[in-house]
Image 1 (tube, rainbow, N blue to C red):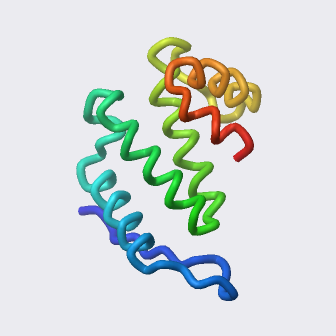
Image 2 (cartoon, rainbow, N blue to C red; image 1 turned 180 degrees about the horizontal axis):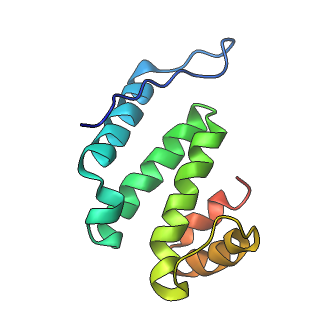
Amino acid sequence: MASIIRIKPKTKSRKVDPSLIKKLEDIIAELQTYDLYKAVRPKEIRPLILNIVNISLELKLVEEAKKWVDILLKNIVEPIMGKLKDDKPEWRKEALLLAGKILPEVNSFSEI
């Protein structure tokens, strides 16, 4: 059974729309419950991951966004490049270049 994720904004000086937090929690819960990023066809899960990244960035949750960008990169390029190893830092740069050609929206996350 999937655990419930509770997300708290990292800044107290800025008002955060609770509906964004709820939406992000719901999307993450759905992904965890069904383990969709591994179980469905890759193209079907990409819009969900893009939503998670965008909402995380709006909430200033940069580390959360980075985690999901990495999941997205692997989702896009592992079928072409093979299994990527997290212990090799150069994988991310190569993956960003290739993924940006396949899914141009990824280019906007290159600075994360």
